[in-house]
Length: 330
Image 1: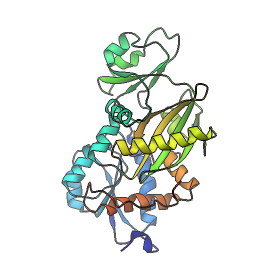
Image 2 (image 1 turned 135 degrees about the vertical axis):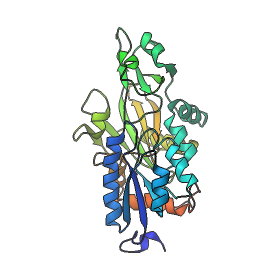
Image 3 (image 1 turned 90 degrees about the horizontal axis):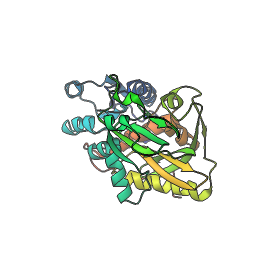
Image 4 (image 1 turned 45 degrees about the vertical axis):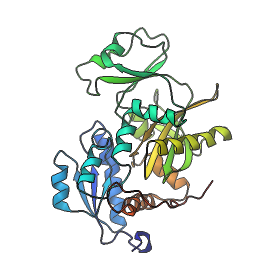
């Protein structure tokens, strides 16, 4: 049966909704999970909400769902670990597989793969956090961020004229790993592009109401203004779409991803910062907003993501290529 052929297209299907988890992005995941779970229920699915812990394999083995909707964000849930569990259990699951998830979460390795594929990425490199805190490893302004976190957790902008790097890097409360990515700060616009089934949707220009596009700007109501579609030169718009598609493909992603980019509108420089393999699905999230702009409402987006997992059959399989809802060739 085609899932989209019935009035309640997921009627009779048991979906395990994975959310919460163990990372610093737990609260975002809980919000994404609640929104996606409600949509799955409206679509007719039997939804079991699973706050994913270390006993995930045992919980899922007992539940025996038809498919897992992975609404986890950050470490463990988005870095290939949970994907490996689902592969072992032979359960179909949404979003990217083990390798793509692990690659995209590791900023240094992801940049190397994307650069080899011709995607423009920032310079910089990986440094031990104690070295990075002891003195400037490059002339300010620059950005310091954990190598394997998302949602702007643990990110610092070191402004021009700063006397020393952020000392939070060596504080006892630091829990974001021993290595940090340090990149030159690129002034200008914060852009985002959602990619569905390998095809870029559109470009959003994000105007944060805080110092930069931090956790609060991303998830607090009114934290940022989204200009959709972005008011940027046509050649930059098209390049942002192409870079995002190329990055999605180079990392081996599937389903829906979101690429984050920076555009220096004075020097006409566009770089891709990172690819999010399980982008947020909260009320302020960019992917649902872009999908809606293209005529795909939230429920239909969730349905497509779920169908995409079913289309592969076994976990980790390659989906049959098809046009995503609301999309057409550019």
